[in-house]
Image (cartoon, rainbow, N blue to C red; front, top):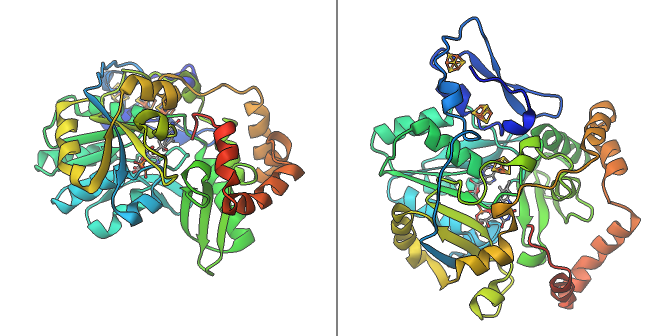
Length: 393
Ligand SMILES: Cc1cc2nc3c(=O)[nH]c(=O)nc-3n(C[C@H](O)[C@H](O)[C@H](O)COP(=O)(O)OP(=O)(O)OC[C@H]3O[C@@H](n4cnc5c(N)ncnc54)[C@H](O)[C@@H]3O)c2cc1C
Ligand code: SF4
Ligand code: SF4
Ligand code: SF4
């Protein structure tokens, strides 16, 4: 049976809990708010399925067939997506044709993987949520749908996609998987504390978008809409959750020792930010967001071609795209020294105290945040951004 000796070796994908025939694995939250498997040894029959399913043990070997920069032609999809709306375009195509879309959604202070069967709901999966999503028993459900002949589109982190494929063991023609270049996921416990803090301050949250194109794609913000119609837009300069994610301070330990990087992925398509659209295509960047898409399999190629009429597409050189925008395709998250101290402070005194002590938010951050709308209106923001650009989203 599985034993987690070092937290670096468990990404919390929940595949072991999904596969255990005796239901003796439960996912338990640790003091940082991340889930790890806990085994009831009394019920265990030593079948070893939990070890064999683990994506941090298994290996894949993806190779890129083609690479494109894409942007959705649908204004609503583009507006609500993190980059070019590639994922929601695929999702719309699959659901419209009778299939289902499985991806990460905000629900009741947490991020969870959900099933979407109606075209009216596809927006629930749009946008990156930089928090670990709870899988629950989704791999079991995917398997049932596949066996019943349903077309399934599954999107998730590379470790979740590998976990699903390890769980299924066999290839299904009716399954499409999409992952992304992944910088890592923050603690769900910190996130729910952030939501509680914001709701106390402003009111009940109705909508959340971690990457709203408030000042264009190159300068997005956290966006919250409250039941009382108030709206909130703040960048990493002063928004607690965005600052926490971009500084790696509350990231899952395994993300700094990720085993599902580079070609060790089993997805049909891999998406990542197209920060360097102009350099990659020679076409002027419209600052509305483009998604880089790597096609890894023939099945991925077929889905890409089928949904291409809903997209603007530029073929790109994948090595150049990865060199310019794909840092996290290969590289694990930076390990930061004061993570332990951040979590001790968070557990002792709460979110605000920990952020005040361990983030780089200060008086000048608030001044810069205030200047953003003016810089945006005078078009100076894009120029500043270009000078100080980074490959992280
Ligand atoms: C945690 C995380 C880290 C990322 N790190 C990078 C990075 O370092 N570099 C980079 O270029 N791109 C990164 N991305 C991908 C990037 O943010 C965009 O998602 C990508 O460019 C595709 O954009 P899109 O507009 O096509 O789709 P989007 O509208 O962004 O949709 C993305 C899809 O990803 C899935 N998803 C969202 N949040 C989660 C989650 N918490 N767990 C699992 N699946 C989720 C959803 O199902 C969603 O449908 C990351 C995304 C996430 C969620
Ligand atoms: S060895 Fe088998 S029975 Fe035991 S925990 Fe693992 S999957 Fe469950
Ligand atoms: S990585 Fe996934 S399968 Fe492996 S031990 Fe952790 S939760 Fe279980
Ligand atoms: S960085 Fe690796 S371990 Fe962390 S969520 Fe992404 S794929 Fe999983």
